[in-house]
Structure formats: C-alpha cells, structure tokens
Image 1 (cartoon, rainbow over the protein chains, first blue to last red):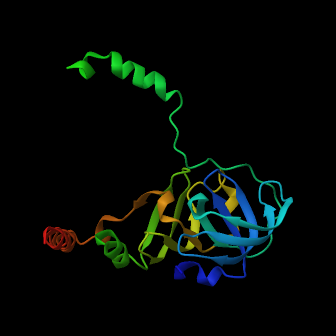
Image 2: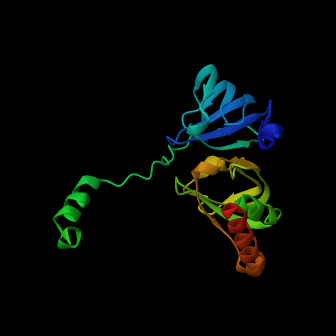
Image 3: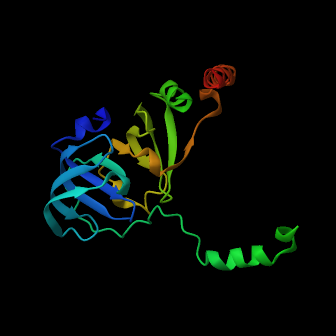
Amino acid sequence: MSPLLKDCLHKQVLVITTSGECILATLEGFDKNTNIIISDVVDRCTLRPTAMAQAVRGSEIVAIGPIDGVPTDTVSLLKDTKNKVPNEHLIWEKVYQSKLYRH
Amino acid sequence: MLFFSFFKTLVDQEVVVELKNDIELKGTLKSVDQFLNLKLDNISCTDQTKYPHLGSVRNIFIRGSTVRYVYLNKNMVDINLLQDAARREAMTEKK
C-alpha cells in the first residue's frame, strides 16, 4: 500500500481523471497501483451525484486531494492528459514524402 | 532508483509541477514514492482563474505517470552530488 494516500482515507476528496473529469467522493480504499474505491460520488463539474460507490482504475487517475468545505460552484471539464496531436497522419504523410526521409 | 533518491533530496522544498493536462501546481514537496508519485502541500494553481477546480484543495497526491515536468530552482540541485550519484548508479548497472 502506497502510504502517500493514507491520510486521505475516509475523507472527502477531489479526484481528477485522465479524461478530464473531476469527481468529489469519499475515499474508501486504495492499493499499490492507485486503484481506488470511492463512495458517495458526485461529479464536480455539475455537482450531480453519479454513483453510490465506484472503483477507479489507477491508470485513469491524475491527482487526488482532500478538500475542506463543499464547493458550491460548477466548473468546466478539464483537459485530458492524452496529449493528442490533431491530424497526426497528415504530418506523417509529409514526413514520408520529404526527401529527408528517403535518404 | 536515481530519480527516486533525487526527489527525496528535494523534500520540503517548493517546486512547480506541470501535469499532462497543462495544469501547473506550485507547492511544497512533501513526499515521493518509488513510482515518483508526488505529494504536495499548500498548493496553488499558477492559473487559478482557468482552473478553479482545485480551489478548496490544499494538499494533493499526484500520480507520477501524469507529471510532465517538475520545475526546480537552480540552487536546489547540487550538481556535483548528482553527477556522483549518476556515476555510481551506472557502475552498479554494469556489474
């Protein structure tokens, strides 16, 4: 058990996921791979409850922080962490066509 | 293990962490583990108006795999010590 999350246990936390979602929930458990179990799940962006309990895979997690006070304002979705290049295939097409690539 | 040890020497210093979703967080580095997960205390977002999500969060656990950069102050790093450690690490790998 990674000890870094120990002091967040059974507390209200804010979880940011790799898809840019923000989740408010109570942290019920976690493991070495930062897989977590959370309960009383509320979407931070809309402040609507989404689930009684939920498991989130560690690879989907960006950050977890305990919060003090319940936020009342809605916020927008965050950027995801995928770091995608738009229209990447067009760039590679140009690379293939360039003389630099052939020699 | 070099970077793990390196980050351990930076504990209790103020760093800026840039995540892969472009959020920049300034805070005191509180702990690191073997996956380079970080724990920051007293965080503040560099661009608070753009990211109000972390307004009520003071301490945060960041998963190491989502960190893009950790910005350090120049005087936080003892370069000679780091070079030494890197050489020692390379030696042990050869054996």
